[in-house]
Image (cartoon, rainbow, N blue to C red; front, side):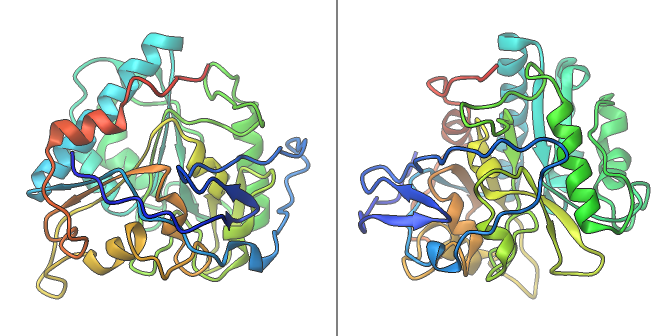
Length: 322
């Protein structure tokens, strides 16, 4: 496995998180006691996320797109098997976009989908059966039906961002802890969160230079009004606290011969960006990053292997909560 150098920059703050200068591990704040009817977003000071993060340490550059797809498939299956062996259930969070394409070619090797609870990293506030815009409808069409995965935590299907965020958090909070574990601060701990990164650095629906990235002190879900209709998104602490958070980028086009290479460099290595102006950098030391060679071409790192990427994302020294 090839790891980037960890250059210590000093004490900095991510949202309202004081962060260790030695290992870039967030010291988690105490969560407020928020019930299903009390999920209003609490916004941290915008100045609290302006300082810089050290480069990511768990970055894998694989030779091609097929290897990235294979690694993600193996991570999903290994994570599912480990969680089910430990407590009988697997909690999975997924976004839309290219991740759906990756998952569409996964053929489960066992019956783990029947013991899986699926939630969404982000989702537009649209009817859930709208195959043009709804991640749930697209996922059902591409793979959920074939997998036999029926336990999906769905949105209500309205265009009311605040209402959908409140209701979605209520649905997640209603899940028993063996299904969706909580940590000591009361935040949910997904066994696996697959998170997408946009060219502008957005993760889920947490976009640059907007208040949603600063919601760190209690809510699990936030409404995002970057686009119309609005979206809901997992908040940053929830993305950070998954047992395994995986971000992959692969593929290219004539217009973008190196895919998202520039965005991936900013996400994992650029010391000039901040979580506020490039949200993906807030996951540097919380995620395993897996790129094909074009998408990793601006990181100045050597090649890794599928086996090393999978081992990093499913490390047995990370405890399963439940």
